[in-house]
Amino acid sequence: MRDADADETDTERPAAGSVDARLAARLAELRTGRGWSLDELARRSGVSRSTLSRLERGELSPTAALLGRLCAVHGRTMSRLLLEVEQEPALLVRAERQTVWRDEASGFVRRSVSPPHAGLRGEIVEGILGAGADVAYDGPPVPGLEQHVWVLEGAVEITVEGAVHTVRRGDCLRFRLYGPSRFHCPGPDRVRYALMIVAP
Image 1 (cartoon, rainbow, N blue to C red):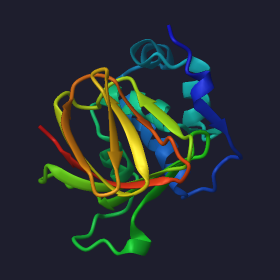
Image 2 (image 1 turned 135 degrees about the vertical axis):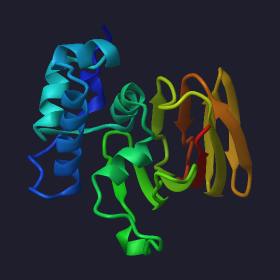
Image 3 (image 1 turned 120 degrees about the horizontal axis):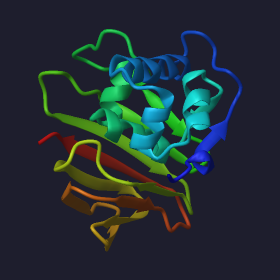
Image 4 (image 1 turned 45 degrees about the vertical axis):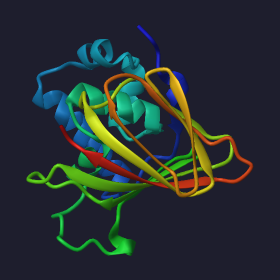
């Protein structure tokens, strides 16, 4: 089993009611709702039992890669998971109310611009990667997920099915995701992009 301890970031225990605390509780609910032990989830996700335990207790913040693995196991996009830890979704989402999640280890910042809704298939996410940042995903949370990446600032190298695409300001890359993917910001500046996601 591949140990994902390298994909975690130690942190102080999050304040009760914070996004991180609600995320930890939701991940525990998803596991127990399926009747899985920590050992079973570890087997299915390739994440060590100790890491999963610490994550559910709120003793660490997951990286984007680690959260991506857990989303895949539970059949959810990252946005849907983050929405589930938010309050009642509104039709109009003000900028200051949009959920922002940070992966300090990789330098990735993810803003849910239009959180997903149970009756809708599309969503928009803003991603920011610092120069040199590199985020890899083992696979999509839902096979065949349609993605459109529109770069607003800088440049990003996106690897899909072994092909590397350099996407610069104003460019848009679209694809359906069935396997691993990787986002790398070669620098020298950060990259900011809009990610449009459409569920199959």
